[in-house]
Picture 1: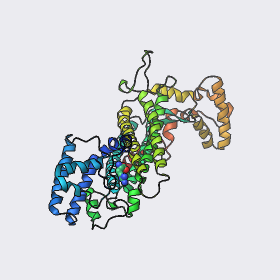
Picture 2: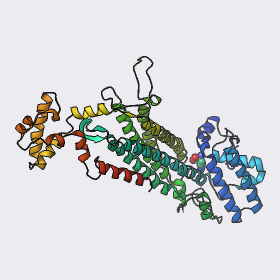
Picture 3: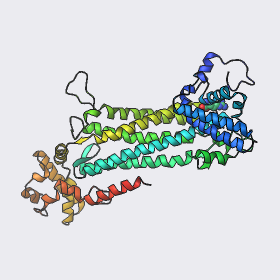
Picture 4: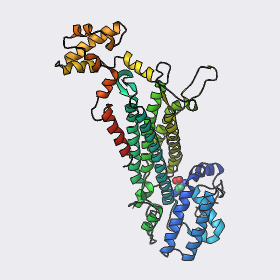
Length: 457
Ligand code: ARG
């Protein structure tokens, strides 16, 4: 027996019943749905829409059910259509006729919207604090690696030296923006839909503000059709999750490259590596690869949510029941990924000598050599050309720029003098880049401060 057996009398076909049922998915909303019902019933009684004694009975039983859920004691009837109808049926089983009053002035349409928004607001908070964990561990690692030199790349070709600290903070900023995105979308989730009923509100004198306040929402949805027809918040979470997973995936890709045989800049601790079933020498970055791989699912979920909503006529359509499985999957995937990322970052070991020799062999001080000539009065384009020829010479002889003798430098251009060696010293090159936002020592410490401060906003 379903809650909507009125006009319809025959039983649903067994396959139709199975197809229609969303309980296996929306049972995750059980607490939020009970909390929503408690707030609704309290308000109904206060407004004298239902008898006050009935209201007290309903609130007491709903609260008992909530406590049972927390204790893992409430048994869910798996044959129920969804979590909302199960809870009404269970309440009626326990209280008899009074239980049937819970749905006064309410529809499953606004009830579903409410439970999902309550749940999503909480998950946004969890997501935000996991992002903060990742950012803090990146900042922490960055500070400890402020002087370690590593090649910076463009086109995956070694370009200029940076510090590991500066490199790690580049990701910290990406996750800081992700955090901002989630906090920003939370403002829009924070509009309470209950009172919209099916789509057109109700003539009962509901006090929507009382329910809003009781449930901790900042504002009300101000159009009943929008309130039940809108799933922007689901799509916004999916979009922010997709962007955040894209950042994780890029970081994972870097780590996969930097731990590979050709690079060996970094290694994972054994707790975050796997072996091969046949090759005894292997230490594989499976966890980083899975992070990159799971990003695809979250992208897919975003596309599903957008496509689900794109041609729905106003207002609620049953299609919208399909909003939750993919949302839950994205929430779970993003949260478990961020939770793993934090200890994984903490377990990384950086290999100083490997990173430094990659900087040396890749002529990463060539720009500094050109800048030296500019400081002596040459135009940049001319200095660029002279340095290019020197790099070619060093490369042909398989030596670094700094091991060319002064005669070779002077021969390339008379402005060169013995202070060129200081100017192209890798550590000095790095520390000299004091542009705001650059890797220089002072600029870096300001950056660390700014990153910490960004988390307090
Ligand atoms: N389980 C449904 C959902 O998640 C509840 C809403 C049903 N409403 C309706 N008018 N059929 O969308």
